[in-house]
Image (tube, rainbow, N blue to C red):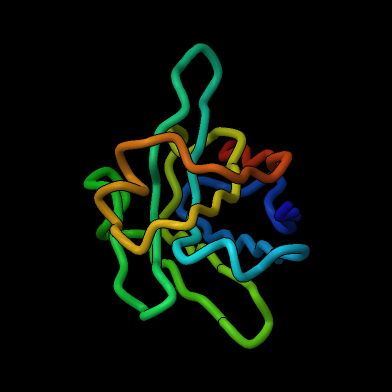
Length: 124
């Protein structure tokens, strides 16, 4: 099994920044792509960003000009940096991981492993 634990999040003012971290443990060999999804109140969970072990990355259109994703393979960690946050970025952010190295598959199918989520609230 793979365990994913997120950190970061909290209350952010509009126009502010966030940095989320996620560390993977357990059967690390099972995973290739790691990334982030989010779920806003009353909405479906949506893809935010993914990065595979080779460093190729994919970002949702809604965030590609404001967010970036990075990874530290040596520490089994993935990071999400968001700038110029908007109210519509308010959501629970979930770290996710999957055996696939194909970013399109990570975006379109339900990843195998999930963290418990961390709340990000963008408000004055």
